[in-house]
Length: 238
Image (cartoon, rainbow, N blue to C red; front, top):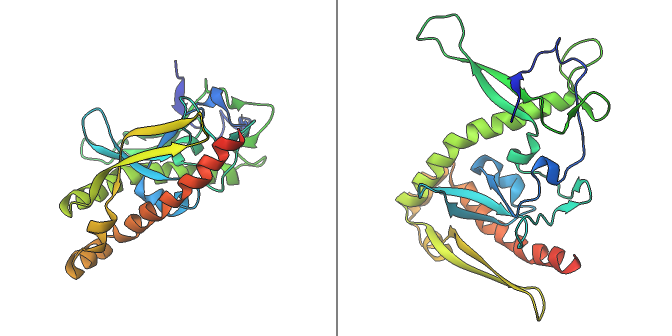
């Protein structure tokens, strides 16, 4: 069970976060949930696809491998990519909301929370959370940015898929990859943006997508599909 508490610069002044990645930290997955405000960084490394959740709502994911529990970006204890999806980069940290004393109508105060039972949390080695003489470490500032990406991404994702539905841009795709003569994979139930429909959008629709910030996300998704071939190459080398 998780042991989640509010991060405190006094009580937790000596905590460190191990730098290693791996299965113990939940990194052995072949897909990771991502958000549109990550697309610009993600499209340089991973194929971005869409899937439906249990309620039938679309969500964006990146493809990390083809077999179950396979992350081809993991090499030993390293994640080999210039950008790690925020759901993994956040490590043992979560955003929490503490109710302030301003009354029933007061906005809850946003706080960083940490799972003390996460295997990355220790006092011996890794990234320090606080500086020796007080203040947040560069690593903790980075984590706060990652948590902000996740928090903002939830709302942006809802708006993005609403825009995709409005312009009828999502279509199912058949993703089949051949590794060699004996290994071939089909990635089931995935979707992407229809290049034909996107190419034929009216000027008014393109302007609308640009003004609400969704146009660049579309370009990133389409460009990211070029990463399927390098991912296959990673699989061949395994």
